[in-house]
Image (cartoon, rainbow, N blue to C red; front, top):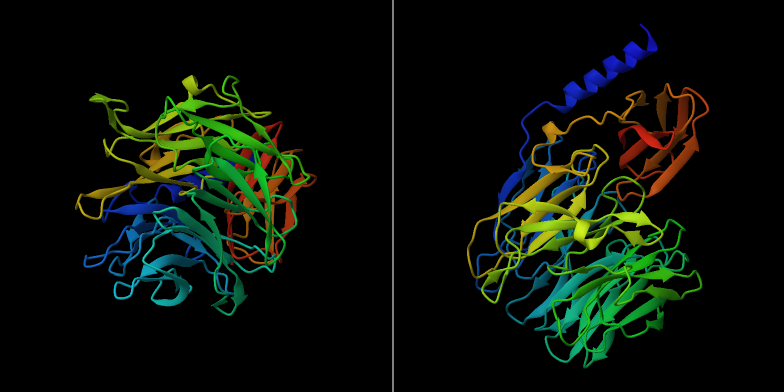
Length: 502
């Protein structure tokens, strides 16, 4: 058998394996959704979906729902009967203890004394969450607006960050340091009198292996950067320009994380929102690229709390992704349908003109605010969109998770089986053994090019020029789970797929 026939046969086998089963893209879920996230909970190589809900006392509460990815473009809904109180504004899955499985962090509100706890549901290794432990937040009667995670002290353990909303003049954010063996410190809070903490983001801004904190405050419109010193922080403040929501991402690929931000100027035109970038200078200082007149900022109207920064077209550059709300203004329909806007990164901090944005319509609801999450749900290497309508705990309305699959050509479609093969892809590579353990092998007929491997968060973990027919990649130090491999030739992606480490 010739090499070309071998690869054609291999491609056909992969295609036949992919199309087994019927695809489903819409799943009915309970109402009052507050957040949506995704993670490979059972380490089977497929991204599962997690939903958190708004819950109240004296109410039939469903705290979170898990849609387990079956690997055939379908999901199985888990038990949704866990009933306790706490608004899950930002539910997330992350390795909290020392095993390799992601756990779930939620908020618990005791209706008797109104005390607040972090409730961590520990993974049993199969994506089930029947055991939990509570960690006291030492506050009473006030909501927790946001949960985040990071490694503030650089010890390799996941610390937990919380934002406390007093719904009054004083707000706080704090850190629970992870001591290991499921033990945490008492939260260390920082208080902002006469200010509202709008957003908090976590990331390593100075490459010292310790995660820093970006906080925006509403009354003064400032951005506060807290550089971690281990178990404390030193503060750096950017000029006042009315920052609101922020995201931490490396825009230009220089290895330094920049800050994407939404700016809402006060005064006339309250609906005016601008997208800005604070460029990391590498000396613990940032240069804001914003101007009310220049094109670095992009004007838009609509939802901004679900701002995402993701590479939606596989060019290695993060794009702006944000939701559009259906709403009425002065009796007129401003947005006829809910949807998602994408502004593509052109490089050098330039983006597609806001008038030429890519619009993804979400047709299943024509009202309200939506929560979105972006991940590769079918393992084809392209970022897909999952969304759920933010509901009201007091109004029982049907709700759905809606998944739209990226075909790699700028289209987001309902049925992943209809994704057409890109004619530019050569289909000349294979990865084996899959699943594997200490080594992955990539065989390719390409005479030259390069190979890159990414983890599930999109971070490059390996890259090498192609010098032989089979490239042997050692994986002893890699964590268990799913990885994405790509073969590039003449500046184009020639082939790619997913690889599972057992």
